[in-house]
Image 1 (tube, rainbow, N blue to C red):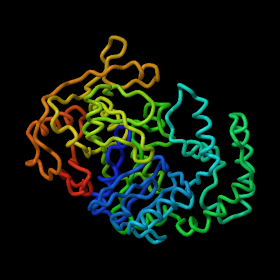
Image 2 (image 1 turned 180 degrees about the vertical axis):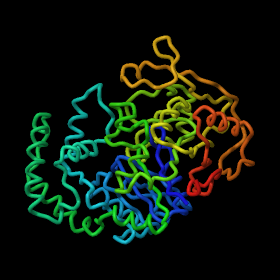
Image 3 (image 1 turned 135 degrees about the vertical axis):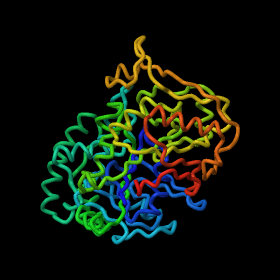
Length: 429
């Protein structure tokens, strides 16, 4: 048996929530290891829709959910999410949800800094959600973050808040934004502490015990490789590392625990917010894909930009992400198209290249080199075996495998959890 780590391989929104939910039936514990409440998963279970941002998707399956130390936690957003899913019938208690006591807390001043800086960037704005994730990670790296374990030590909070306000109020004043008082921060922490602390625990220790006992652990990433702060389309990226190797450091486990790495990819490509997107479609074809795929952000509600599947970018994501196999989602969105295309390379300043450049100017200038195939009129929606798929759809999937150099391990054909074709069980990988 093997643990499994699930990561996105495009720009997020690939359908990780459904795949993690589907895999959770084979797992004992599901762990979030990076990101914040700027990422969203939508799960559809028997016509019940669950929208999760911080909570691990495995809770919907009745599994133990873990929020690791690599996640930055907005306590109010978390408690609001817990209240919402409890109303939908889920059980969320300190026995079913473990939160790393060393996870940093997102404070109201983080969101204020985030929004103020984005406002002054003008045409160079990044497209942040304004929820304070980036500034919270900055504080973590600068060693001034308030962590969940600090809530039990008033004397620690006292000097840490002074340090935070000295830094952030200086920035806020310089940006022309309202500043915060110590009393405001203490009131915020005083309100959330009684609800948050009971969930806090030494997650690393519990996970180690579970792993030694042979429990199956499913690691759930947020965002995607091309939003990784090191390997993505910088600076139009998130504020954390999103590759599979972070599952170890973001949960407190060793690298051997990561197991089989499953990369999630749509059968086409989408992106929310700013940044380069070589295969983006600006015509009726792109708008049609967006409409059929219901491409709106789970967290932001913003419409997603849509384009052809980018095999060149996927090769990079597979290599730096350590991906062993791909879960391909939303194949059914391409049903009924006369032709489908795949980006197989780029043109940059009159030359053909086979890797995405790192410099922002070059990223903005690349043009896609497309390979076009015949589409299919038959439906793939709801297919649960290869025999249910049109021959041309199978050719499309096989061509993707050839171009990216990785096998399709799972194939998703609708938002419903059971409309999934299993090629290889990742837990047996």
